[in-house]
Image (tube, rainbow, N blue to C red; front, top):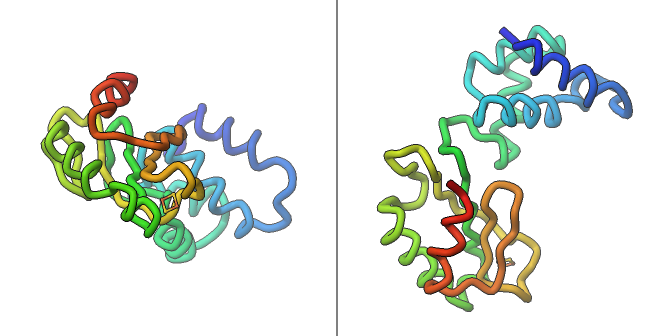
Length: 155
Ligand code: FES
């Protein structure tokens, strides 16, 4: 069931500029994910009722859009770019350093639920490769030795 806060955010943020229920679906999923960290089957049921779309339609949108998480994630999600510029400029060193520091590999979450590490296609800042995002924040020109300080900013 949608919480009062979730419903209020959906009502407010989807009030204008969306001609159809379908056009609201990505934003609605993002709003619910903001509240719950990820989009469970239960969340789809809640949005099914709210938007009047079928669960299958919502699941298709959620599955297509790779920033909608259909499995539990940690408090912070690291999206590590593995596209060509980052790969050439040191992706593997960054991945190895993250593996060492966090004790997890791609697709995994730390036991304390702090970080989930995921691969991501080009983040659009190839001139700052290698790059990653943590939550909404873009970090570029990464070096393995700078990762401790970077991660400390995400408790
Ligand atoms: S290849 Fe990594 S940001 Fe473009």
